[in-house]
Length: 437
Image (tube, rainbow, N blue to C red; front, side):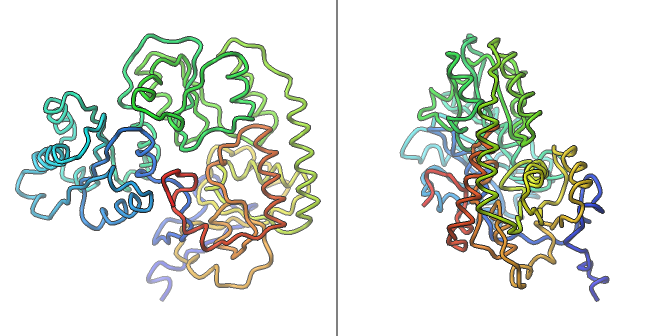
């Protein structure tokens, strides 16, 4: 019966046997109730003085409306429901233009920008998004319109997350460049002020701009002045490159690795781009090593589970922990990302680590099974292994470099000693979203 329904796909593979690329066969998926990652609604709300409008079918609207409600931001969102009839009467474009116009004219405030989201149903029908944006821009010249997408069908090409992080900067137009200013692009939380990345920028007299710190739309527009755009999240790389190409400025991608050599390489690239002297970083590396030793003493041989939503390079973190004596036993991840070299190294030094799928339908009842005590790094790992001892971060938590390693080690030590209210925390949508309750 399982073979006939396609539900016999195993949700786990031994690291030593795992292929490079997709670890599991695609098929029916399960979405676990660990909801701390940001989605396109949260991300769009980062732009101050903007209004989001979603045009999609009612089933899709339910999720985005609930997200806005959980953020206490329903006043910043409106929606247009697409019916089956709209698909056949040739009014797809005009219905969106008319709906958006009615919404804008009825708002109690005038938004500086409107983020307009079309769904996959519009793309299937060949809707002309460019015409819609042009007509709305002509009708409301004081408002910046940005084309945004709620299209899960894009996941195998450009993910909705990556596309949204690129569209965040659509309204930025060329301005006189300030050579002493830098942007961090594509983040949904500020980078740790103590990180090597931020300290080098600020200690050398550069202005640091980040959408997470923009309080007004004018502050957001000033990001176009920066001479260097930096991204370190993989989902932000495309947006960083597109923005830099459009503005004629420099793009710098410094992925958030846990490998000491790559950390130093990233810092060297940063200093070269800024034209400043590269610091030694020996003290920072020593502090990271000391934090790891302290965490290991607290954690002991307790098994560690790491998931890909907590850190963008889970195999890089796993390799670092294994090399420092930690008992990394499980990794929740479906596809190999940027840390391929660390994946290959782990195959040699710790091939018995088990890789579990985050979305395989056969993981549905996995949390109900009896599990040994596990310390989890990430919400999905905490959910699947039913542990209240976990590090509650997403996308590196804003940490970076050697100081980031030290902070994550500290959080692991804290997690080993203090259980958390797992069910309450993992049901919270969008960790770090200031508007959320």
